[in-house]
Image 1 (cartoon, rainbow, N blue to C red):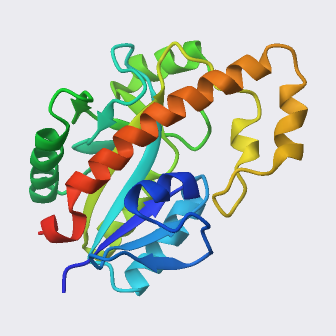
Image 2: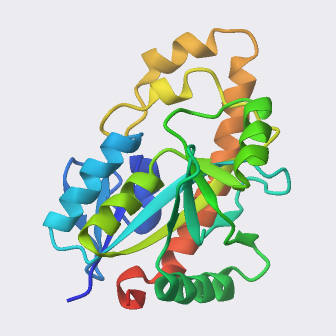
Length: 240
């Protein structure tokens, strides 16, 4: 039986696919049979989560969540459905063509002009790319239009087991946006943002309150697009 397995780095991202509001570690089975798990941020965490999905019976793997914009034309809320994922060393890992085509058609029809949609390459970086200068350098060096920290690892597990592979990402910070200080540190290994004590230390820094407020506003736009894309994708039904 075909069954999609979805890896989300954060529990907030998993909710776009219908996950429980209070996430518990493990794998959740969605009403359509799709398997969903929260990995935490980074390549190693994503790889472990993808392997757990394979062990649970997933026949196709999806990396989903938010991404940082590298190409200046893309703003918060733009949907990324890349045909290939790039590593910082230049390696290229394609997504599964038939699955990509089916999901691309479904999401395009559902979103229409509500959110821009790109199938250009996505870069996976082992470290956060945070500043506008770093983003422009990554864009010029790789040609990728957005960046995340997990998709390549999920794709490598899919390739190892001969499974289909897909990526659905939504831009949360544009190329000119600066991420709030401590954002990566605020996400724990379980994929949840740490409590008020962790964030409060950064909010006390002059200018950081505004940075976090702007980030929260962009996250709302990105999450709305991700939720719409997730509903339209019908991942298990569209899996080749």
